[in-house]
Length: 134
Image 1: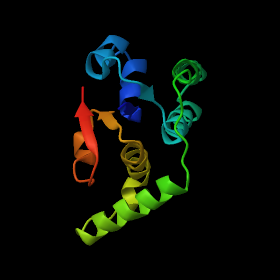
Image 2: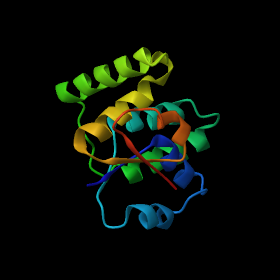
Image 3: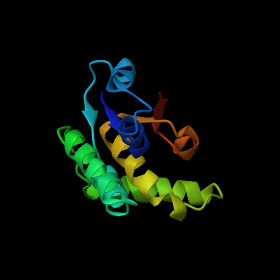
Image 4: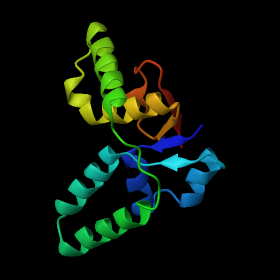
């Protein structure tokens, strides 16, 4: 088992809305992983910061979390992604606006990890995904 951590959780830690201890209270001794999607989203947020000081703060936060192992996106992840997107579409939901969330969900499903998020509604309808909230 393990946890894939949604980008919003890392942002909450950076902003002081969550403490690392809050995450450990949920994950316990289970390993915690990053996704390249999360790295991309956090880097985007840093690069688009309103001031150089905020940019530096965000880049420093990104550097701190990069000590966590990063899951690879491979062809199995791609197959799971395609299947999940098709299932959502068959259920009448447009998967396109949720591309980043679907990549995270695909990685969590692929590895049998829970996804830790505060945005439960973004993931609640994804088949086979175990969602845990803080």
